[in-house]
Image (cartoon, rainbow, N blue to C red; front, top):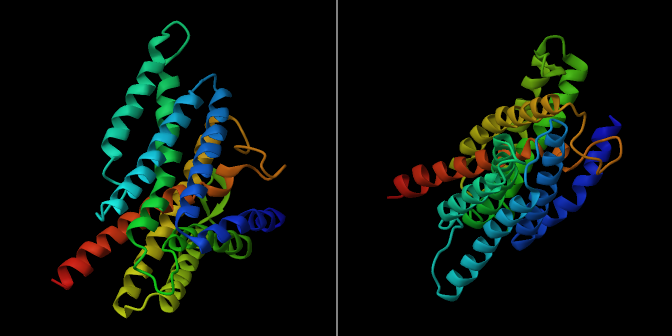
Length: 286
């Protein structure tokens, strides 16, 4: 219970950044990526695997520098820019850097490069989808409310409702080997909580009533994907032999322990909104 309260206090500055929106969200995602990758790589060191943190930081800087530079250049030329245009070159450069890391063949193992790539994609690229969501779908919500709220609602509401649902109703274990405390009842409550709050969000901040059903679908998917993200983080920690990724809150974990489910809901929300845009705004209004 105390962990949930402390986690909520840590989330407060993030919520303020989301309220401000725009480049504040970009800054928040960049910081989470850089700090999260460091924690992730420290976990690998417990397995005698040594990914390259400098390469990861350079890769994340290139990703965000490309986005910011491309956006300002497009604005100056009065052209559209989504942030997707430079992703393929970024992927190629990142993979090449990780493979060059192996050139000191006497000192480094294949696992070192693979762990570097995994950290960059799993934490850096997944969290970048929040930036893409803010940039591409700012128009979906009314009253200047950021669509990034969907990412946070599906992640945190699932976590909160799953916790209390499992605490009061839990009887049947969900994945006892991966996470012994999680229950099927808690999982169902988490999904229902995600759906309920995405519906509330849509009811108050989406003017197009026909989109409410879309948002409820996002709530269902978010409830499922969020828990997959949480379980994935648990698998990594078990394999690494650690309890928490970091010590941002002494005794309560680090950045990744707070954002493990967000890493999965960010891509889910982005691609769900992408599908909604194609099906509704383009096909229906054609």
